[in-house]
Image (tube, rainbow, N blue to C red; front, side, top):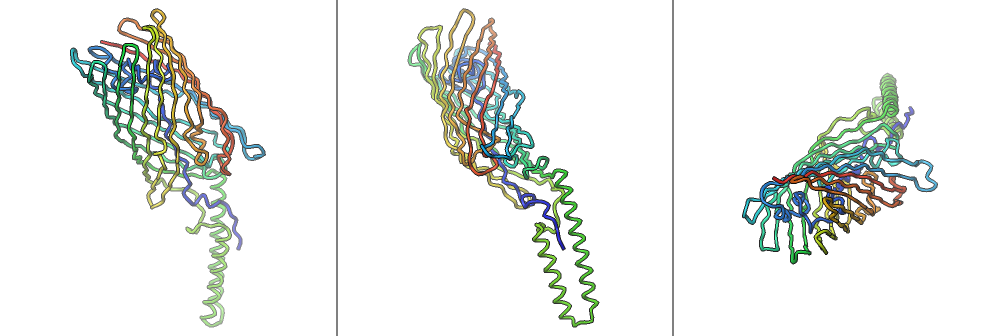
Length: 461
């Protein structure tokens, strides 16, 4: 009997899921974005709830609100290694993704404390590659939504020093899809969501009228995601499985007929048993040679299985210094450190006992931020620059997070209209080409480009 090998063993094993959804979104206000997010030592609008909660002590008596939207369009280009005939150029065309924010602060009259509430998304990701990408088995789609609800409390300790503390309730929703093989159409996916609690703190010190120092800290968050996994074959694989199962059924029928013929032979029972055992051994050997799974048939569909896993988000801290040579100028420089090395791996447990362990092994990184704002009549004109270090080593690189060193430039303008103010910003981010050579599906060169706009509206009453 002969059987075709219709599917690789990958189809009957749990895939090594490429899950790495942990991208930080530092842009949480248009005025700050225009200044390259060098805002920790300034923090003079309600978005201080995120950038430095001690800053809400500067906002005056009564209520201050601020709402905004950060929209980003991402393009990642992949190029195969020289001589790779299987790879092909593939662009990720990402539509504009909106990231909203809302802030509310309140300072009781003649008091040395203030309250605040922020709702924002400090992490997020949406990445999609064509389904026929040569690295599809490493990942073709990933999305993550992280929503933080962050009440804070700030107090003026001395005339020049304020501190702020907050807690955050965080909702996390994640989805991943990758190919089972290099053939378009098949897939493995995970969807899950969960809740967790974190915290933040800030210090704002103004030793002189022209200078201020800010420190901001956000705690790590551990998202326990509960959801399910799904797997599916493309039409060619399903047809091949069905054809293979038909051959298995025919072979089983032939074996049964052979056993009946052996039993009808006028020979001793011991000889019959030996012949039957030999026929069964030959049948089992033919199944093994054809790559038939232990279940005795090729899969044509897979069940949806409950799954859960813990996804880590890092702690990060910012140190900023602001200098105002005149009342019309504000120059600031910040250094932001992110503890990515604490995010070691992601473990996904599925119903039935199967487990996926996905290594991250990311490394700590810094962002260096500089910004300037100039008052020109009723307008505030700002510009900024960020250099962001790469966090993802080549050994655990994945196309869903094609991280690299980034150069980010931004400009913006703002104006006040009585108790209302409006800020607009534009941001351009460039990631130089990065080449990966790991003898894996992800091998190739990757480059990054993004355009983003931000708008924020504030009101004091």
